[in-house]
Length: 310
Image (cartoon, rainbow, N blue to C red; front, side):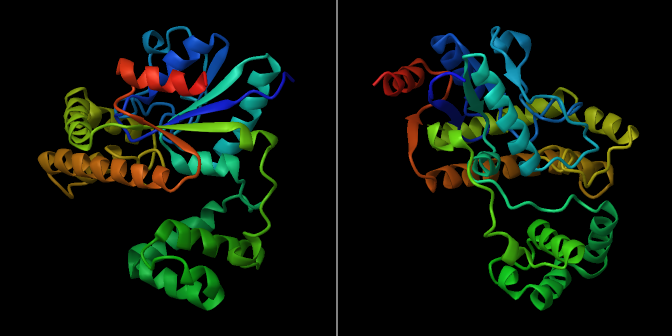
């Protein structure tokens, strides 16, 4: 392996221009490769509302971990962290510099601070928990968790079905409480301390306008038809792929639960709220370099390169 060079991470809210500035940084460095850090761009066939870069946008820069997971698979943050770790070592073995680009903060955190070794998902158990949720509500599962793992229940919200159900899965699969297992995290990878995080911080009003315009464009480009096709291929509405922003509301429309206009407007609201949560998450991380503006603005890139060259 080469000498220990920095690994760069470009984060920020959706629609802030991460792809463009990530590619520009790679071209500036001359020997860099990009690893996708977006939890939706990983899926095959999930195209219109994902902002996957095309060949023109990539500008010859190698990209990894994009469009490689079946939409039938509920791929996890731990899965991505494992794959990303392998890619980082592979890229560095060639003497090149990895650049992580994407706004899924949970992926990045899992890469830097790995989870404990957890059991593989038991799909039958997961289906039973989902069925219980549908029949009796998420709070019913929470009450079960309070009985079997009080410590985990105390730090979770009663309606946080994803984390409550995962805690129950671990308990019923292993007989151990997830609250007892979580302190047994794997050691952070060697490169964790070398990751330098740069966060885009565009003006809120302009970002929300861009989000609204992009959501409308996705529907005009055939988002409903894309979801229809995925469902005919057997992709379930409750998969991680179709649970992504935009896709989730289209599924509700196709099930007759809301109008098309409502699906469009709710999608805009969902994505604006998501962008707000992303910004809040990155603000709570340590050692983040903030870049005011969108990623496609010359001044933003100039600021980034100025920090790197210090």
